Structures are given as C-alpha cells and as structure tokens.
Image (cartoon, rainbow, N blue to C red):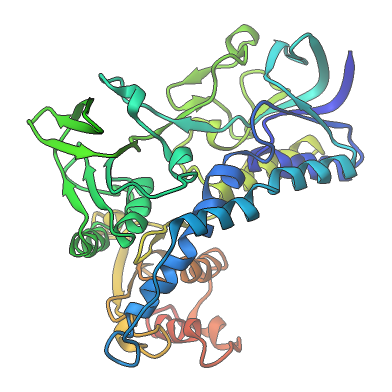
Length: 448
C-alpha cells in the first residue's frame, strides 16, 4: 500500500495548485484523476471557450468602426477555428502530466473511492495519506424529460466540428448566452428557452436587458416563461416543445440549465462526509465533517461564485492549512464575467443590493461615450459604481467589451480600499484605455 502525505482526488485548478505548493514544501503528493488531466476549465471549459471567442471579439470591434474607416470585415471559419483549438488545447493535459512527473507528483489514473478516512482505493490498489483533498468539480445537469438523450452540454458544444444551422439553448444563463453570441455571428438560427422571465439573475438587470436587446438585434430569439417538456425527433431534425405549446425545430439542442457537484461513487457517506444538493459541506477551513479531509472548488456547497479563480484561491488556501496555517478562510471580492459580446462583469456589492440599502449609492459612468477613442468607438459601454457612505468603491457592474480587464482593475481598487488620493500617487500608461476609466472613477471616489 503506497503512503503519501497528501492525496488529491481530481487534477483541476481546485487541486493542482495545492499539490505543487505542497510538493515544493517537501511533502509526498499523489493526484487521482479519472478523466482528463488538468480538469474541466483547461480541457473543455473556460480555456477552449476563450480561445474560440477570440475572433468573434475582433469582429465585434471591427463592427464598431463601420462607416468610419472600416467597410468590409472578415468571416470566421468555425471548422478551421476548431482545428486550431485542438492544436492548442489538446496538448495541455500532456503538458500538465509532464509537469507533475518532473516535480515528483504521482499521477494515478482511475476513479478514487474512500475506504476509510485515510485510504482511497483506485481499482484494486489502495493508497493512504495523512490528508486528502476532494476537488472533483461539477458536471452539466440534464433535464429529466422525454428525449433527454438528445440533449448536449457545453463540453459537446466546445468540440463541434461544424456549427449546426439551427440551435436551441435551454436556459438563459452564462453558457447559453456566450455560445449564442458565437452561433448567431456564424449565421445560425438561435433560440433560447428560459423558464424565468429574465436572464442572468446574478448580474445587473439593466445591463442584462441591454445585452438581450443587442442579441435580439443580431437575430437571437428569446422565449421567456417557457418550460421545455420534451425533445423529439422529426425526420432529419429535433423538435423542442414547451408546456405552453411552443414548438422549435432544431438541429442541435443544448441543455444549459445548471451544473451539479460530482459527489457520487466516492464513498463519502461511508466515511461520514456530509453532502447536500449543492455539494460537499465544509467548515470555514474548508474541512469536511472528517477533519483530515478537505474539499476544494466547485464540488463545495457554497454561495460564492463557483469560478476557476475561486477554486485556485481555495487550493492555495488548503496548501497553507496543511502546512500549518490555522486561519479561517477569508475570501476577497470575486469578479464574475460573462463573455458575450458585449461583455458583462460584476464585482462586490451588486447594484440590486445597493438599491435596497441606505449604506450604498450608485454612480453611472458612460465611459464608452466619454472615452470614444480609447474604447474603440464602443459608445454603449458603461460602468455602474457602488460606493459606500464614505465614497469608497465596494462594488461595480460593467457593460462593454473591455469589462474583463476593467473589472480586474476595480478588484485592486476595492481590495486595496484605494481612495482618489491614493490613485493620484500612481502613474499609469497614457493614452491607454484604462487610465481614462481611472480618471473618471477618481472624480467620485473618496478623497483624503
């Protein structure tokens, strides 16, 4: 029986950062993986998604110059783009495997299952460790409806060799809207069916409404207040039907109604680890009900955004816990981004929460109009700041193609509790886009 200081179940961001840190600290480490090495984000999540998104972002920027110097844009060949994706993404798990081998981290391929609090079995082999970390992530949910066998998920979509002519997305969340943004640009017919009366509940609904209007103008058809009750085959295509009698012919149906934690077949109940519908229950040290067993990443039952950076933060935290740090976990502000076109971003106190509290007030900055040359004529781009009573920044909502980079800038301002006076003491590159926003923000921030 092989013995280690730490065993990790899962090789994604929720685990491998801690594995590397602990190995560098002199601990013996093993990682158990039953699927692709490096996990969902690297292989069939955010990495391939942002790679495929690149040309669409460039096309959107070109369109902002229509009639003012640009008259003929380019076209996107999805098949060629997908081939490029395979060229860049497919080697990543091999590279991560090589990294683990180089560092002396043992990689055990197969499904791990707890035997007891210190022992994990993989096939007919058993491995023991002082500490074990569960980072098995989530998988796509699938509606329990007739025809569920015809439903695809995000992993399938990100491997499509050719874009279908007619697509139906079930759910109006991040995945559906990001994929719809690409499909409609390629000329596909796109329908989005949503049970609720709005999309993207966690984001500023004024910005969401602007995004929906933009997608509708591009040709995306939204069907709110509709529940899909079946998917059937008709001749050479599918027919999506709803409880209200809506019928949508489609060549491809993607179920984007949510994700569920991978907690099955791990033997958790047998060793006393509690789970809920949301995942594994942990304390404020990310420990399960069994003190030497931790959970990390999306498999945790938590209210904070389940994102790759959050998983990485938790992974690094667990490494420090095992090395002797006894502090409870304290999360900084966490930015969230929707990679549609335009982009949406959200950080800290939401505008919805600010509207319900006298502790905050908001300030809209239409930076797209005020900084036209820096922001490539994206006149609709805007930023809504959430300020506390002392005018320190505590949250923000962004609408615009540069939202992902700008929200990172706002993260530094919020976490650093920076005032306008503090920003005045820094020198930024000019005439960069971000310095314009910094200048606009400084006019409303607290000044010492």
